[in-house]
Length: 301
Ligand SMILES: Cc1cc2nc3c(=O)[nH]c(=O)nc-3n(C[C@H](O)[C@H](O)[C@H](O)COP(=O)(O)O)c2cc1C
Image (cartoon, rainbow, N blue to C red; front, side):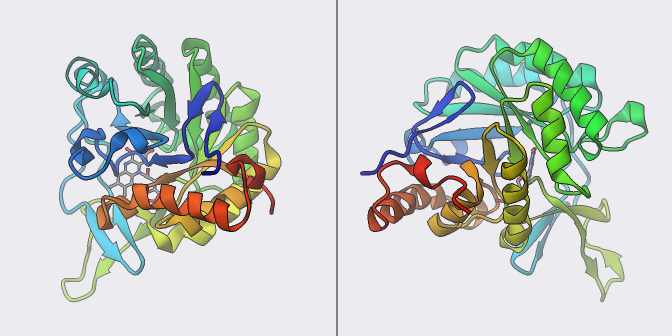
């Protein structure tokens, strides 16, 4: 077997395969289907300071080679996570990363401070695609200043591995990646969903209650690959790539483009065992190509 272990900041993953936030629940929902201990890590649902109901239905729509969602960060809040979910998942032999969202800088800081006290959570991934209420609803992650200021505030409050998840709905994603690197992020992950829309022509209505939503799945893969390649050339910190990965070859493509690790999202809905197959296929690729250590191929392109 090839060496598949990779490092993201101080986080040591046994292999580069993670699951993407919002597509894998809290991991435990998949325990009867896959061996969670085999995963490099899993990123749990977007977690906020206070409970959130999410958006009204319908909030998912299938599209060619992908899907649109407007779930709206439905979750029971960080305290519920700490008291009820964490005790059930903390002993899984894989890295658990919590995805954090908020409407203000203070929200992010408070959630990350609370999570820092949990010994089995060695990293957070902050989702900066959320609306910044103070800046009139514009997402933090769509300007260098917004992305930098939230990273700076969380960095001060959170001593463990800090991953910043970037929005693709920007003109120049590399400059945003540089801005968060300069403020002390240990890693960037990309991409979050691309803004999209679907219309039901017969009923003359949008398919989502929110009209627009986030596009994910194989349809976004070429855009995600391009962005990972651009960002990997712009920053020194490790890049985590995602967007439309459905098999081992897709994962290898992201690593060749510069990703040190990958996340699998929408593909979990189609085949809940996909992560296990991707790990095996990465290993098989390494054997076929005489790769002894997966890190050798990162960023070859
Ligand atoms: C139903 C659904 C819910 C999601 N929820 C979150 C979330 O809470 N936080 C987040 O950062 N990304 C969230 N995402 C985005 C995914 O983590 C991922 O960035 C995106 O779907 C692209 O990867 P994929 O094509 O492999 O799904 C969600 C995606 C889907 C489809």
